[in-house]
Length: 125
Image 1 (cartoon, one colour):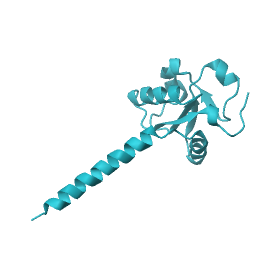
Image 2 (cartoon, one colour; image 1 turned 45 degrees about the vertical axis):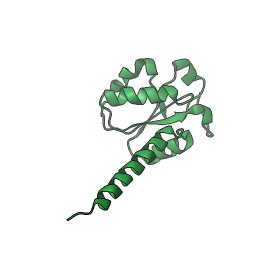
Image 3 (tube, helix red, strand yellow; image 1 turned 60 degrees about the vertical axis):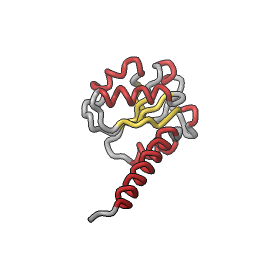
Image 4 (cartoon, helix red, strand yellow; image 1 turned 90 degrees about the vertical axis):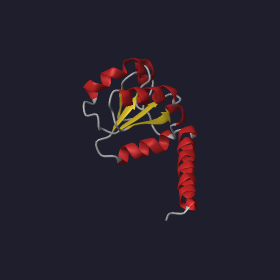
């Protein structure tokens, strides 16, 4: 017979996992770590969802520009919906919206890595 303590331990572990998930959600994305992970992930794409003008003003090398307002156009740029997508904008807000839209479109590995405002590396113009 299984003791009631194992059930409560399992519930406690579930609550701890949920709390950690919430903490991860609330923790701001670190674009520097995100770009490092992008570079280490074979086949991954770096997606800048800012406007074309913002992108032209300076973007992370290797990024493709797909503005949030035109996120549906990603299908022509990245047809394989299992491709790892590392998404950024200026602050992380538009990239969070874009990740939600990408997931609704069926992309299975889209991540918000935050905003270029915190980027410590070089930019291309």
